[in-house]
Length: 509
Image 1 (tube, rainbow, N blue to C red):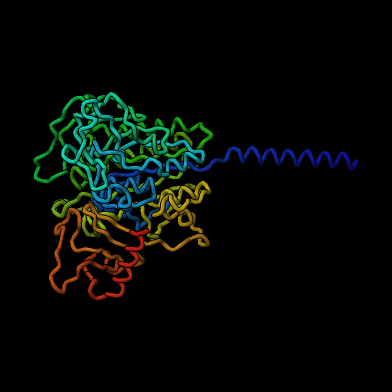
Image 2 (image 1 turned 30 degrees about the vertical axis):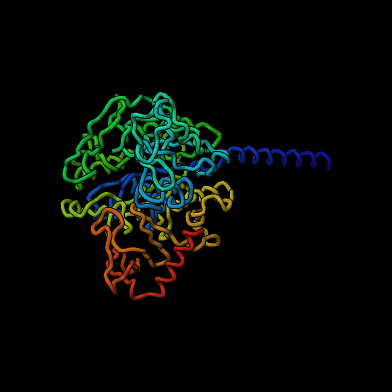
């Protein structure tokens, strides 16, 4: 009798173990979706700015279902360097592009042996995809007659030997670039080469052009009196079927197709979704014209919000929402000039000084939202100081991988912040800000130090040469003076020395 009972107990135990094993097999790491708006301001999103003239119900809802960060920053105040920082966890001034951005024919910026967030996740069982604005350069293949023609007189080459722009007529578009997203950890890609106002105007799917850019556009809204606003795009090569008004919906449709294709997979996925909007050209579809109180730009932001909402709905339809981390951010501040603030009574950068390209907060303080059902508390708000270089370290924590010293050196995991894990929370590292002209700033605690005077970007005055006795830099208390109006540089010399030393230490690391 004892033997029979033991056999029954053993059998029941095996059943329990098998049941647990089956459940464990069905549990997979979370999918990760990174939605990056282009030039969307902190004050454009209505949950950040109750007086916004733009309605963003879908982004607001995402925030209400997750965690909203109030002190989040892009690593640069312009496009290309921020995108480099997101994928590598490094500040772009450590790369071959210490200032500025690439153009449409710029050379690939990502180093060939550099671990990216995509390659890290791919190595740990993820299917990876990028859909949207790449703007990290491609190694285009030159026509036979021009292979030896690239030099400092025929192309734009910076001091590190990086080609930032060249003549599109020299490129053999029938051949796929030798370096693109597939070389940096992505299994699938569908991209626009650079910004939507830079040629070539075309798409590449898995590094192959979907249509050759053999036609020509003379550009649009080039003489409006307000550069890079309205439906502005530069002249250049364009594919015959390319429609500027269709780019945003096309990226969202491709993203929907990608997540649907992954919905039955046993593998988790990572989707990097860098939108080309609301960066110029401001091209809202007719359904959105006049929808906002902030003109053409505001209408385009509302279209972005609606498209994001449509994409999030597709996650629900494919039963993916529950095990998916959705991150929403912007690559830098808005291109929103003072006269636009006066005209529309809309502060795209909220109460913060400056705009895109500037070293001031308006250039780099951004909306940043993370939703992870069951893990991140719905409706939570964090004032933790974070920057977009923190993605790769956070991904490392998610998959249980510790980064080596040569990977993501400017990346700090926000995983404990998301989970509100007090035992593992660490103090926020000092954050380095960088303007389009290469101005440096350091944010540490309540303080922000700017090495030079002026905006270093688009806002006037761009450069200020201090007179005798005037401060040579800027120092602001960001808690007491978030609008950066009271320069304390000369009043706190010891603090200035401390912060300058910290900045030099980070730069020399």
